[in-house]
Image (cartoon, rainbow, N blue to C red):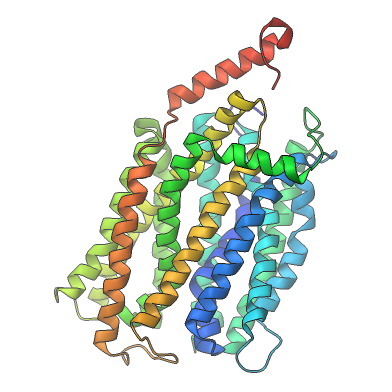
Length: 474
């Protein structure tokens, strides 16, 4: 682990591992509810319930996967064996998720089983991959840079999948069964190839036995360490802010097709532009977030960008409700919406990058306190928060559709306006409340740049002295 600049090629190699997560996230968040509800005929609340249970099961297992990753001791290091073993099974099950072996509406247990296995295999790729970041560098700003690349690659891969879905696989019909099968096949191949490429290209940089042999996996000890790690004050503050943000994100992603097709009535040509707008907003964040961290720090940046994101996201809905929005379906309506979406998404991504990068600083705080590093456990904790919160967001989305009496098999422009209005009011109220909660807690994150650098100096000094000289070997 180094505090020197990370080579560009290593940033790219590490970031390519996030491609699988980007494809999975967009698939689960944008299309899965629509596919199983509108195409296969399952009740929306049953689909949401299955996805929530899968998220919770996955989230509960993630910390143990992280602990297993921390304890892996091989000539290839702690993380690479996982990145070689998991992607091919992931590809097979991902394809099955979009080609369920049933006639008519699938059983609840079929969807639940497939969703759980997909999520567990994805975690076996993503937790070790992201845990490499604090191993590669200790530098406050270089960690932000690595996360910038990971978010750029993750978002780009997800948006490419969305673009292909709308413009290739589902171009003629959003409810095409064959289109979703092709979408699943594309995702399976892309995810497996990306993770294997990331592992192989990072091999010469990160392979090798860890400096110290980790203890053997003992369930009781691991559980105790997880509880100890998650009791860190900084982690609890981070988790409170992230929890609210991810509930809002999960809710928004699950309702994406309903919002863009039914609320905003975008046509196919306009939807083709939408992924490009999102990608441009992510590029804008990629170019600016490091400067924001340099000037304001991660906590202030996370809080401020959360407020900006929430505000720009809600204004179009308020204008529509007040009758001050351009005619729905028109070019003026679409481009006005895209302008607000650009700013909102850019600010939202900046907030998530800030929060994710905060976790890396918690690792050294825990190391100073306990004498142990636990990258896998803390980033598994991050995923635990994200997945539980996203599950709650999806459940909220399904509940809102049910409360608004949203019809199945509906077509844009054919849904009664009172139904649309009810959905907007429920959704926007939740976004506003969650945004305020998230901004408050992210702004209270206690580890600043100065504190982090002072901690690194203390850890280095303790390692130099050793126990015989009053230091602690870490």
